Image (cartoon, rainbow, N blue to C red; front, top):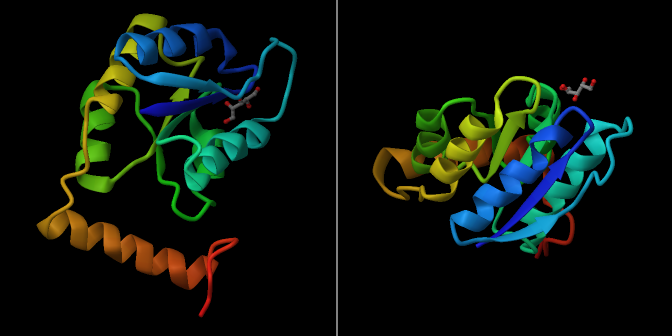
Amino acid sequence: MKIAVGTDHGGYPLKEAVIQAVQQAGHEVLDLGTHVIERVDYPDFGILVGEAVRSGQADRGIAICGSGVGVSITVNKMKGVYGAVCHDTYTAHQGVEHDNMNVLCLGGRVVGTELAMDIVKAFLGAEFLNTGNYLKRVMMVQGLEARECGQPQGENNE
Ligand code: RB5
């Protein structure tokens, strides 16, 4: 898979370890910055990651800020993008398996590099179960999304 990775300055210290974990798991990285430690705004990087996933440029995303919360709130405003803060490996794989999470959000001020790498590998190794109640619940969320957000940009309304 191709994995979009984006961080603000709060997430930047985790970025190299996250990139390494993605590569060790056999996936390709789309590095969307930030590329320096100077202060930036987390929504810019959440949006870059969300847009890469939504457009199909990336299969999944990893968005990192200081706590993981800012980028999580940001990506969840984007239709078709489902992100959550996961600071343990169970949540990271179960979020994909049960909830179809496609963006992992991490807090660079919360988890260390070794745990972050394990979390990334748990996220990337999981697949959505896509059946029964799991599918029904994801479709319920998508119904809410359609009601709240309307048609996504570029979608044909006919
Ligand atoms: C930046 O100081 C910090 O607010 C940001 O990285 C993030 O934690 C927001 O959720």
